Amino acid sequence: MAKKKVGELIKEARTNAGMTQEQLAKHIKSLTASDISKAERNEKELTQAQLKEIAKATGITQKSLLEAASGTSSTKKTGSSSGTSIKVTTTEKKLLELYRAADSDTKKAAIALLKGEKTQTSSILSSILNNSSIMDTVQSFLTKEQ
Image 1 (tube, rainbow, N blue to C red):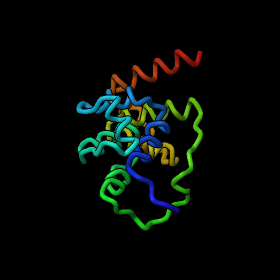
Image 2: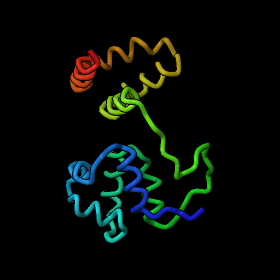
Image 3: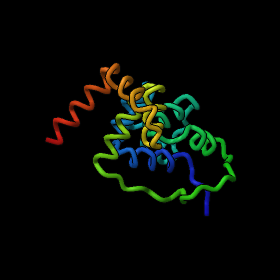
Image 4: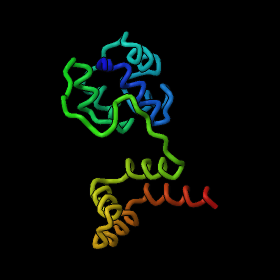
């Protein structure tokens, strides 16, 4: 299977994150939607800092973009093929949004909770209750569900 170019990875990551080029550009201070379009067509070379920001905004690993940009690749195989996209439900998408908005302690507590480590339940609740942006997102989500 041919190695994907950085532009293909950017487009795939952006579309999998449910973002338009304009929405992605808003996350990257130094890029416009036109720049994103050119990068996706491999007509514009991005800096490492820009690639890192794109990775963070779209939820993919920085390593995959940086390796594609430098022409190197990892030989480690994973359980899924690189061309596969995963369909997610609205609830799963909202969980991902909440996870991305959380601080590192909350993320660790959420993972522990999902793994069934019950001792972490009070820790995650405390982290959520003390994070106003997460509470606002949760409140918005709960309001929409009713």
